[in-house]
Length: 556
Image (tube, rainbow, N blue to C red):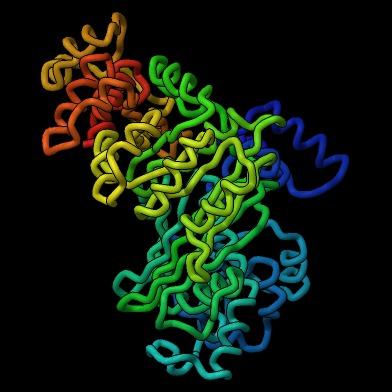
């Protein structure tokens, strides 16, 4: 079977194969690598391509985890040369006679094949993915760091050895492979954490954690050390939490990675937050807002003064939504200053300030300085105390449009939260323009979503018929998640904003801010056509954008 036929079996189009062969004839190189760089197929399929073409087995997870590096090869093999070219001795022949078994991520490497032929070495191959090969390669590296698992600081000798291990090619390649794979799977975070006698790797994709891989326990030190070195942490400190940052480019995508290290019972938990700089677009269309909500928000953005609040838990997309609002206002005749902790994304045309509470430069101190800079629009990352809130409200009353966030479950609760901080009611009534509560729900994959076979049960249980009528929805279809290659078999691809919008109008201001305020505010908002989070989510269910289960998972 030809390589072209194998590639076609793996979904590569005839047109792409032709283009790849034309480029190969002109510039040389391996056809499969050319097509991989063209994006014609996924890197995860490469071991399968090699396996089918060469009729070689693929390394299994049990084989990988239970493999012990051979103690010696009789001096016959150039181990460093093989390792640098993506080959490892998996098993020598019995009694030194017969064929060697190698594991490789590059079975068609010409230099290795020529070397083995010149040395008259008989061999068979086991094909491995890049990450699996990296795990085996790290096993070959001597990782004996005495006393390194204790809670004490490492000695200078131990620290030097860890730095050496962290710089080894297998460690570098394995970590790069994990990061590249995370980006390819659209992960927002990567978790590396000890579980039992292994290190678990998980990706957060569209807000949900997925188990991806398990690394042997002995690999934790090189990987953790590598991450600490790259992010500027103290490699010898294992007793205290640390934070760091990595800047890099992967597949021509500018990437900021926020790294957090936390000591746990059996080692350290590392969490990487991926902030893509080149692929983000801050436009209203990307939020996928309901038409009436979008219209109300756009009206708010025309205001020249007042406070617009976003509420929601960590990870609900508040900052991204505020960036989108600021981007709408970002014109040459408008000065915008933001106070953030930390600055997550750089937006051209904005003055973005990183507050540093450890030196006394917190949100309240920063806000006092900002209002003296003659801004038109101000964003405060979070209102955490009475002083910050008062300054923000007063800034709004003196002619500034202020955006900020608070941590509450819904929009009306923002009132009670700010009152609990000690802010006067008259100040809130005078300054607040609107409050929005937000959640992020996974969006159904457009490639594999299908209509629900028997929707009657869902319609009856959630009273969708009455809900559709009340919201003026005449045509609607309930869709279900299935799963395909495009969405990594999750059934979902991307996320959309579910928003509860509350306009702080004259009537809302007159409602007493007592124990009954929340119920009265919700009732009033519903009476004027507003929706709570569940209802806005159900509206998107009727539009076929997500599922009932997803709405209740994120908003229930």
